[in-house]
Amino acid sequence: DVKVTQSSRYLVKRTGEKVFLECVQDMDHENMFWYRQDPGLGLRLIYFSYDVKMKEKGDIPEGYSVSREKKERFSLILESASTNQTSMYLCASSRRILLGEKLFFGSGTQLSVL
Amino acid sequence: DAKTTQPPSMDCAEGRAANLPCNHSTISGNEYVYWYRQIHSQGPQYIIHGLKNNETNEMASLIITEDRKSSTLILPHATLRDTAVYYCIVPGTASKLTFGTGTRLQVTL
Image (cartoon, rainbow over all chains, first blue to last red):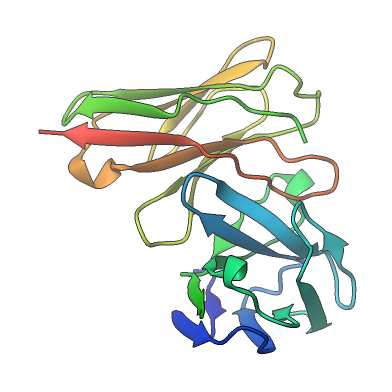
């Protein structure tokens, strides 16, 4: 089975801190995604990457950046964390979607910014 | 991305079939329809996907209308463990999946 691993299940940070959320997948997938999930808003796409060193903005990229130096690893960076970035963050990976491939999700990181 | 519309919530009695509808009237000819579900506090889980023909796997069946403008996910014998939020998604040409708010299915005794 494909495994998508997020480095932390729960994380507590202070306002203004730089925060790194790490995601690793073990199936050589081309695509990787970062979503955030808030009550009543569903999952919203922050950034995605379809290849090493490639990235595309999703629907809500403001306040975030990403890094993909290796195919298996996709990092989400909060340059200066703010309280409105308190959320559940979900990482996912897939082969190319247009070929009918499925998306595999990690278990999520619940980030609290105080 | 083709926009999808789902009812916000549905109830289903345990043991009965759960039929979850989805409208995707702007879908284009080569776009797949995907269904995922999310059980509380977990990451979303893939259920099934299809292009034109009806599909069935060990989890569910997917019925896509002939004009492809709507589809129905069928859980043939719902159990309490099927209580979850169900997402219907049509990815766009950018190969990204955009999730809406889905349908919250409550399976009851």
